Length: 209
Image (tube, rainbow, N blue to C red; front, side, top):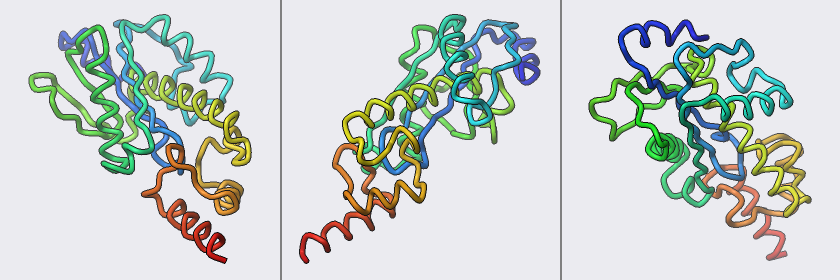
């Protein structure tokens, strides 16, 4: 994967930041965004798009990436904010904040197909499937995914009736059935998502009956 960054390093850029998110599709929980700058020439053939890795491998790489990274940051955007500005803008906001929160300023930005604003003078590439092409983006995807999974596992302890530890908030058949049964919880669910809207109406109907 480092092949993508090599020509950029050869142009004289030394602090390439990769950005990605985890959790755009789930019905509940935050969307988590991460930024990561890896050292020049750092190689780890295990690093890949987080979706292609097992949970165990992701967690091992999570610790490795945090240890070797020149800089990284992780930002969670709440369900309330997602409902307010929509998931696309929430993802953009999270990635932007993640870059700005790093202790090191990047000189080149690569995102997973997400144009970012407010970084005038810094070259930027918005790669389709960037997490499968650029190592720094893949590293960011792992940081975001593992962090979000940990958040969802903690939420599961508070609301075990939704079995969140299993589906992590994604709209599986089981999750939608449990959502319809128990109804959505404010602060946890994304009320702008259709399955949550429908579950809200079902709950209202049951209460009226």
